[in-house]
Length: 296
Image 1 (cartoon, rainbow, N blue to C red):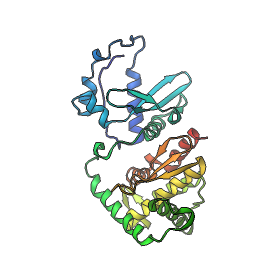
Image 2: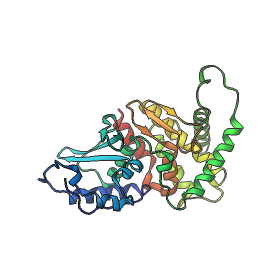
Image 3: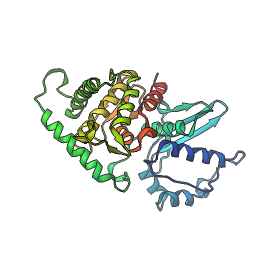
Image 4: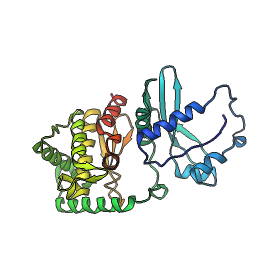
């Protein structure tokens, strides 16, 4: 193992940019380098400098890890689970993502996002938010919480132990599906329907902003939450899985997650925010299709 030049890009960069970074790293890789027998001798300075931390233990506290293997058969991305600063890591086999040799930079970037989504989430204190994102998230939280308050009711029977936010997500997925259908989009919870949701965004969002007088020009946060819930329900019905939430977390809406039957984890609301901000670069159908291939 040898460490040369290190590159870093923001975590919320576009999928294509992430894939291009992976391809550059592969192009710079070489074979025939002896495996280290003393890991303390491996220079870590370039990695620490690229990520802006001072020590390896600090790096472990604020990062998630994935490995990428390339062979004649294609690419394999493996998410890793940390066992602690001094206990190393272990691969999460059920979260592996595989791609053919002819995968594009866009494909690699999306696969990398899926692999990281299967990692254990970072604690809130370790997450780095990009400049300018806090106001948009606050608007999103405020709008969605107002909607949740109007929907609250006494829970009885089968769903009594289900967190309210999950009930809200499922209910809002159904409601937004009806609204989309009434507006001419085939929102039938099929995987193919994500193409219709992509079309919705193309027609209602321009450069990360709602089209004037369009569907998203009012109640933006609540409606994005509903569309994210719809996307999550599409994936859940296609691949199997269960919603998870922590209502005590102030970012509970944004961090609502879906645990798939194979153990991998995705965050549909976060994904819908990326689609809103980045446009077709983070298309939803390609996202859902890639997940379905990895979760047959």
